Image 1 (cartoon, one colour):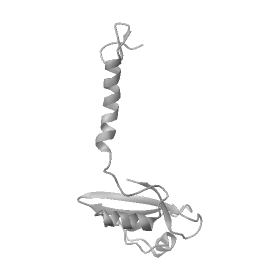
Image 2 (cartoon, one colour):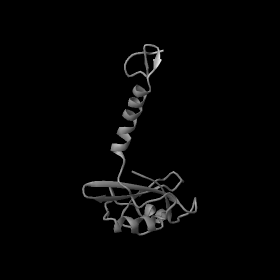
Image 3 (cartoon, helix red, strand yellow):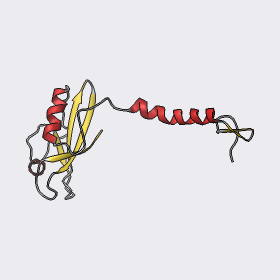
Image 4 (tube, helix red, strand yellow):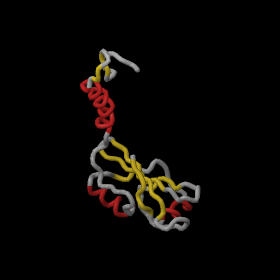
Length: 124
């Protein structure tokens, strides 16, 4: 067993104060890095998400021009579309920008295996 200041144990005794310090130090980076609240939710239609993001001040900012096939698989004409994967899963990425921040929203098709309007699965 490791003992000493900050280990949670000091001179063979449990020190809850030291343990709380470590817990807080572990949580602080997550809190500081947490993104501001976004108007997105899992399984939300990309069309609905797009409208909400525009209303919140985000602007379409695709990293690249999607191919005609990617446009087909996305099943939408949103100008935020950057790309869709060729994996058969149909993952599509929509990119936005606001006040120097970037946001990528990834969707999966609402009808897997078919060109269909995507549902939000993650964002960063």
